[in-house]
Image 1 (spheres, rainbow, N blue to C red):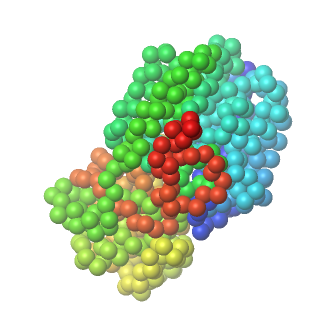
Image 2 (cartoon, rainbow, N blue to C red; image 1 turned 90 degrees about the vertical axis):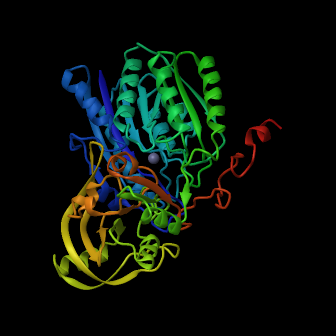
Image 3 (cartoon, protein in one colour; image 1 turned 90 degrees about the horizontal axis):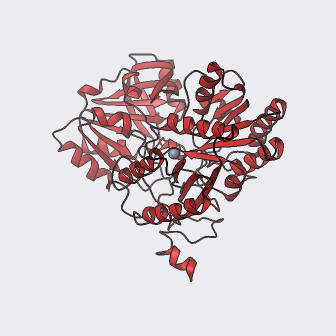
Length: 488
Ligand SMILES: [Zn+2]
């Protein structure tokens, strides 16, 4: 059996001041055919899953390109066309095929295309024909279009947010697509439009129980797969919003009913699935008064994983104004400041301006006399089994305050973003990280307490106030009861 795989992935915040081009893909992750590492990345977990089967001799694998750019602003059209055509040319050269499997994110938007993944899957279908099985794995923070559903035989989505199960989702996509190609199953996909956009972390209730229920449905053999698309509120897409996907073994009517029931259950969670969001002063005050250290505070909306810059200084300014001791902040994106730190050298003390450069909503730059504690070329942090590049990075100290500055924008995934830069987190009282929820998996085991601070900064965090231009469907919270409105 001949199987092709490729991966093109990024998440586009169409409201971000940033722009994304090919160099962003190169800087984050770009692997031409055959050069994918042994470890998976978030969206390319189908590669190692397929290599395992190729090594066992059950398939002949033809690898295409795998690439990922850290979430950012609009992708420029030439970059998308280059990557799209590169993969489609590889696909054509790999014919004839029994299956083609793609590791996608699902929220990529360019200045010429609002549904890149739908466009890709449609082109793939035209090339491979109706008999080749097409599988795609998506991030839940994506826009599920009808075009994607029509052109893929199997769709799987990470169930967990934080996405600690990306390897399982890639494995499931490969497993179901290959079974379908062997004629062992006939996947039928049912989709229900939940008509809401919300933040849905699965580390807490009610989503925790909901995801466990989906897993039980899969394990019991009732269905082949069930997934939740959360939607991505920073993307101006006509397909914005949550969806339920149920894949049955040729039982479409049963899948439709189940997708609807699960969808309305998810809809009932609206407005109560997110953790408590505090103001910066509330979060810092509560952390300072805690007896369980370190307290981890997530700067939830300055999250590079949501496509903003990650250079906001607002939390840090509050820390300095409050005179808090034993605080570490990671990371603030500032390639220019890192360059100056490298030029100054480890141990140097000098006046540095850093942070607050890319958005009017991200606070003022900080001017301070800093000590350079550690410099690391091509620093990394871990995210599960994947390795995330931070680029050249510097740990700087102001009094008792340690700050990690990085060159490759990246959200905070793991405490090793501090320890790899020589910051001893066991001696810290408060760790401030830029992430909405992906930090949770690796920070929870070392945290005395976890708090969420919401700053009304560069991220469009309230859909009622966001100027969506492409949305034609009624969604909660813009409409109180969109399902009623639909029926009327
Ligand atoms: Zn995501």
